[in-house]
Length: 272
Image 1 (tube, helix red, strand yellow):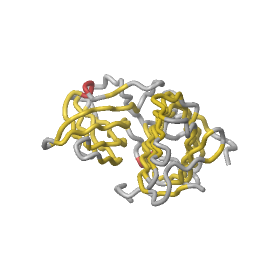
Image 2 (image 1 turned 120 degrees about the vertical axis):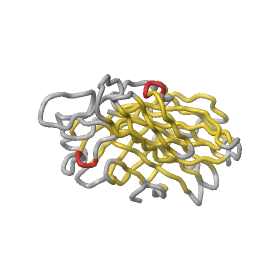
Image 3 (image 1 turned 90 degrees about the vertical axis):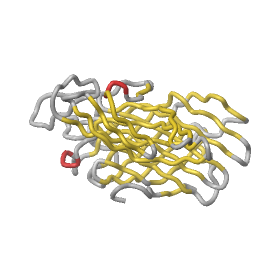
């Protein structure tokens, strides 16, 4: 049994011949994108991403789109996502390091208060690929990292799944993204470990974003259902930067949060 879900908040609502993405590229008549380490003094870059926002006061959570802009002439950024807003020095954005290094996207983690309510937001933001630069006739492979968490109310089992790997295939011809998150190091395990792999398939590409899809969770290759019935949630992601050698986004990142009667699964991944 696999659980299918769709995004509910987006603004729009075979592995043969894979093109591998990775690192910055130069040359060719291709769009120009500033990296997050850019020292450019003119122009602007469009910021986007997804975050998993936790209302710590009311113990609720959701995934939100992030939008914003980086003004290189003043080196300032404005960012909005859920209740989180930021306006100030680009270098002071709440970036946090994962296991890899990426040119156009980074993890973010921030705790803040709005009207007396305490929030924590975790996810990724970066320089998104312009919709006009999205390909329509290739398939690209992205490899990177993943982080996840699960809770199973039936067994009271839970674990933080850290330092995992992500293998992501974006089929721009068919308009779908598939991801495998695995090879985690489990931490803070309560009970017996129940999940070591998360698969998300048939996420639908829309512009420079993707979302929805079908989730499967596994242990040693065997399907494990920790969610139960009445599953709801969000999977949302973005394409970042541009790889001129293959004519496609250079990097990819996504955030997953799903709940059911029996448990929940959260995950983040970035790959290039």
